[in-house]
Length: 258
Ligand SMILES: Nc1ncnc2c1ncn2[C@@H]1O[C@H](COP(=O)(O)OP(=O)(O)OP(=O)(O)O)[C@@H](O)[C@H]1O
Image (cartoon, rainbow, N blue to C red; front, side, top):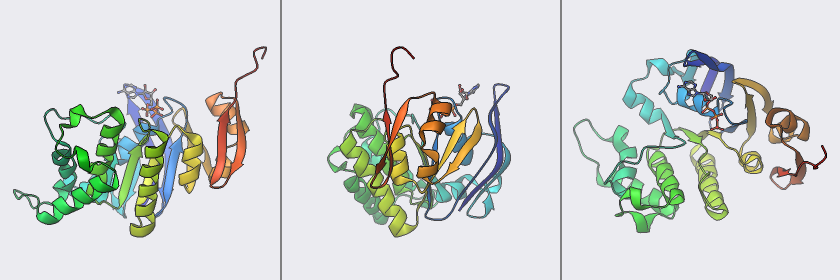
């Protein structure tokens, strides 16, 4: 579904992403992990078509650079790390923006578009906020609305940049289970970034560990979430505990005399 080959992104004269290659099959969930500044968001932004890059990105077999804005919006939906919150827009109006690529040019949303959006708002426990101005919602409520807009787009590839960073643990699980359900039922393909490594490993088929713009490890969670790799690339002291759905990563305080 997504092939990223030798992706290189240069920003402000610095190479931020350096020859990164990632493939994601239809219906697969791949999560990029790595320390702050590793280049995770930059990879997602290049795939989402909002950054110039070198190398090749193909989405559903088509070169990303050749896609029109509308064709891209039908193929890829993304939730950025800190999306812009338009002033004065209601939650329903904002989520309806996700239907834009499906609305005829100069046309209006249909009843079917409205039904899709209402369904997604219900799935994300947001129905009661529909008429509220988006800027009056809490950070976690807003984050669910950003996801609602992306899911309403019904694109086959979903890019999620830290989609649960503002959510309480219950809503984290709700949101990730919903994405996983869409993946199993609709073969939604997911490329995400995440800082919670246990959660990353529980939901992804494969993890890609990025450090200083390069892929330093890749594979099933059991192979990437190791004390050695996390120690080396995050400079973190952790213990790995086997869990029902993947390794659980527990940060352990460094001993005071070390
Ligand atoms: N316009 C820019 N000019 C120069 N450097 C930039 C620019 N945009 C991003 N960077 C740098 O690129 C690096 C990668 O940023 P990116 O947001 O991709 O990291 P990340 O892995 O998503 O980090 P985090 O975990 O902190 O969200 C950072 O060091 C950042 O400062």
